[in-house]
Image: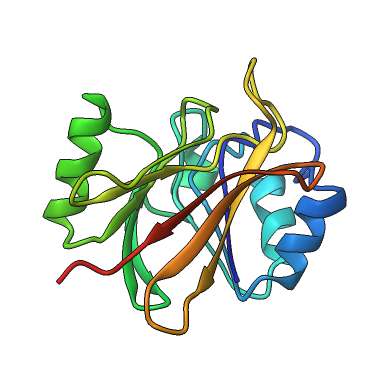
Length: 172
C-alpha cells in the first residue's frame, strides 16, 4: 500500500495517531507533499516508515530543503507519479507539471483540502492534512495495486472513515 500525506505543519513530531499511524506503519511506501515545518518532524516520519519519499513545501526551511527536493518522480504499481507541494496556476499548472515530467498522476499539497481529479489526462491528488486541516476534513490517501494494473485509491479521514474512492490508471 502507498500512503500519501501532506501539510503536517508541526513543531513537535509527526502528529500521527490511530488509523493514519497504522496505515503509515503498514505501508510499503509513504510519501509526503511538504510543509513539515521542522527537521525533527521530517525525521519522525522517516522513523515510522519502511520507505519514505518527500518534497519540501513553502513553509519548510533550509534544513529540510537541503535534504529533500522541491519536486520528484516515483513509480508505484505501474503508475508514474510526479510530486510537488504546489504550483502557481492551480490545476492547469499541476497538470502541465505532470505532463512535463511524464507522469500519470500528480501528488500535491498546500491547500489542506483533500481532493482527487481523475477527469484529465493527468490525475491530480491532494491528500489534505492529517494534522492541520484548516477548515477541511483531517485526511490522508491510501492507494493499492489492482491485479489488472493501476491503483485503487481512497481519501480517508483520520478516524478511518473512507469518504471518497477513485482509480488511477497508467496512461497509454
